[in-house]
Image (cartoon, rainbow, N blue to C red; front, side):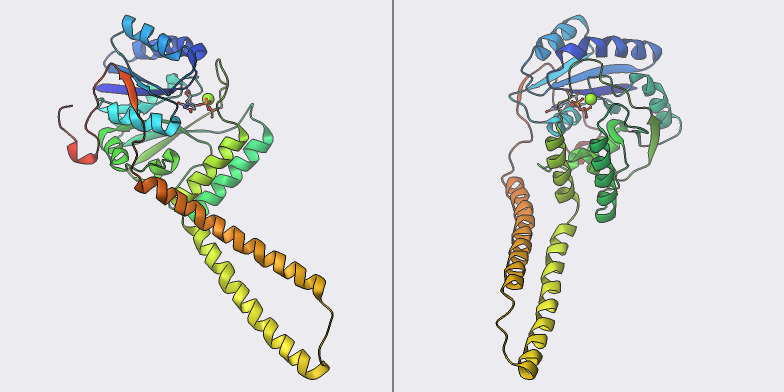
Length: 322
Ligand code: UDP
Ligand code: MG
């Protein structure tokens, strides 16, 4: 059985050697499995590609795909899946935050217990700023309430999948990819493993708070149309409020005559309504912009260099030779 491990790398020259050494141990502990290490160089600006090529020249199991620029981790995952040739495919970070030592256990869950995929989640967020953990937790709670994506709190992208699972992911060729949601959306039987958070072995994280925040909005827009319904709900609610106010003002006019008071409240109401209108236009705009990017049908990534062959993508070609 062949196992492909996809490793998205962006400026990981410091971590790659540690990663390779650690993987070496895991691969030795699974002698019956044929391995392929598929590094996806996501337009790194440091010597990541040089390190990968060095590994590839020593070890024929090392394959790589190198992008023409930085396309983001989601694009790197998609590229990895479309080039993956294994019966089983894993996605693993290059910084050893996804412990390779879990692989044998994940492998057994698919081969012996018959699961289609094995996913992992961190049970704690040790070493992470508390404010980030707080927002992350709020995000997961909100996401599960408003979408069908079925995202588990603390879920990592670290996962082992069988061929049908990978083909299902490839069949979703959308441009705005939010893998954590896609994994849940495709269904299948998934087993969850838990582990304690591990800190990055070298180098530094590529995710600022702001980047994560924008990413979470991408996730919501990609998997839920609830914000659009909320915009409509605001509209209905404001209509009801204005109907009541009109009746109130007419009755007051008839009973007590006109009133010159009320301009501060008028300003407040105008600003409030202006705010709601802009918010709703903004919500509409974010869906429109995603639709715009989607209809352009630009490629998800552009490969500049590789030492492997792309498998035809999509579920329809399962079982074919690459
Ligand atoms: N990564 C990538 N492209 C990017 C950003 C990150 O391929 O634009 C890779 C990165 O090299 C690493 C993985 O995604 O292997 C996770 O990134 P990181 O460790 O910085 O994220 P964190 O673990 O802090 O969430
Ligand atoms: Mg990391």
